[in-house]
Image (cartoon, rainbow, N blue to C red; front, side):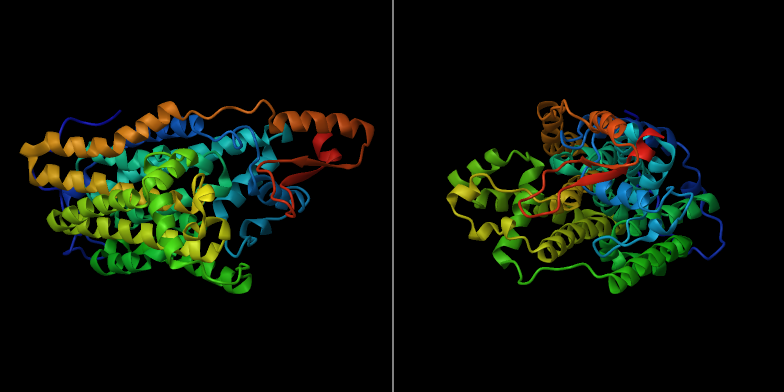
Length: 467
């Protein structure tokens, strides 16, 4: 790993708020001359990409998972020749919002890659995007904390939290969770050059044009516009993405079920899916804890993390205070918004009996929220290392409280690999097409559909398959 020794001395981190900055003014030397970050960023990106590949769930590895096939690849196939015939699919709404990165990735794959390799290509792109998110978090977090081990942990949370491996890794349908976790770090970062400004602006637009929940950080974006003029082009592009999502929601609103979930279920859902899953996502183990010990242990765990975060807010610099506040806010709001709008009775934990609670369902809505809650600990550790360097072993031990369970989960929870894959489905379909040239074959994809629901599949013409 690329991380250096200690604190960068025990000197205070350079201020990146740049209060005296004027548009067009030169960035101070101590902010501009920081090229050392890039070797570390490349290393973090590579390691995170490999971890993402290893942790792909069984139903995702080698498959076009859920919307990856039926929606993202399928919508391009219905236009004729993907990319060549029409680019309109890039901004086609789905479920009430835009999905720019999945639309772009699926269009390129369906246009350039043979059908048998579509799934592996999508898997690879998804893992690379998540690895890049980790690398960017390592870079952007330098404007909040200077302690590199903490920044490495912040970055690797994107691929090592148990919730990431439950469903999100390896598919483009769930990339938006990782972009949501990236957002507060992006908004808090200060570009060092003109190239950096426009690179960050591109990342900002792509992120929010893929994940509408990024808009929950609007107060943070407004604050950055006020205090750091250098970030304004980035914020403008980010706001353009927000505007695109709002327009899409108005034009093609998402269907929302009736009724509101119980408040108790919303709170218990946060404790379970955001807090307790930082230890494991094994539902039987979590259920045994809830049934035999009770919910209080989860509340105590989340409360302890919030207490540590509060300590970091009291002792930290202005940027650290804002970062911790934004992470807690983002964690709570993203979970609550997803849970309330989802309105799925299968996750109404307060209404479950003992049998149901013994094996509770885990909701992917906690993916980014879990990362953000966990991220408050490395930020606090960095603050404490800088404020009280003599106690560094104790602060590293606190960092280990977060890191060790993630490492154990990585080692002990290796997913199996399914013997059947998308490539074999394509091979079988080619045999079918030999008998009915000019026909259309339906290729089923995971996950299995619930009774009464339309199954996940890709309708593929024999002419495309054999051409």
